[in-house]
Length: 253
Ligand code: 13P
Image 1 (cartoon, protein in one colour):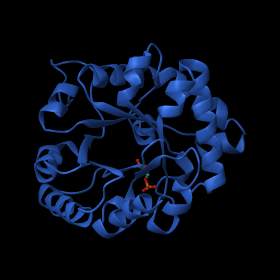
Image 2 (cartoon, rainbow, N blue to C red):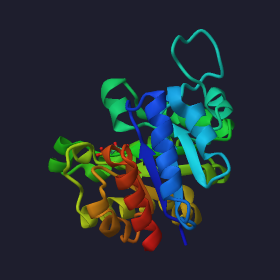
Image 3 (cartoon, rainbow, N blue to C red):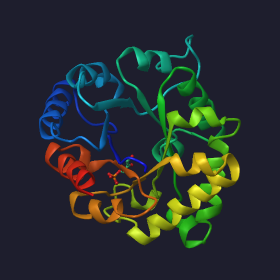
């Protein structure tokens, strides 16, 4: 049985004082959560502070990106080792905003993933199609290619440190959620691709999160789908009430 995981991608929101406040509020609202894993992904600037707040709790902390080199003259970049040193244990890789605005490709996603794994971070690898791609009926081709590219050369033993997030680009920040059926269909397809590529056992244990306008009102129905193992929440994770409500929906399933 795969456990549920609710992760919050804070994107470029929250100063350090705001981050401390939100992390503390989430901590208070989730004290009795026992089955559901919670991860908060603040901006780099607040990673250490948020990690301090949640130390000793079941809440994990993650970064939103990394650079694959260990260290060097790469102005403004952050390595996996640096992320680890803040107390964070997770990292989001290949978010569609990185692909869209910052030139991320399947090949760079793969490099970042390898670096995350080497440094003991758990990676949340994002895939998803644009509206044009969905309308052109190539969703499966697009997400299949993204997932194969991301996991190129990744071996079976690494999958205990890998989570996938399916985030249809047209559903991110738009208020347009994929219907539970639409999301389930792609999740099942991704699991099938994983079974073909890496074997049934890995495919069955892999957690696949859904992301794209997840809110307290739609979380329960999405999370009830057979192949949806959690959510990667954007807008609704910036408020402790709504993030807490989504976590409680997962816990109640
Ligand atoms: P929204 O929940 O704001 O649509 O964002 C989803 C997302 O991109 C999470 O990574």
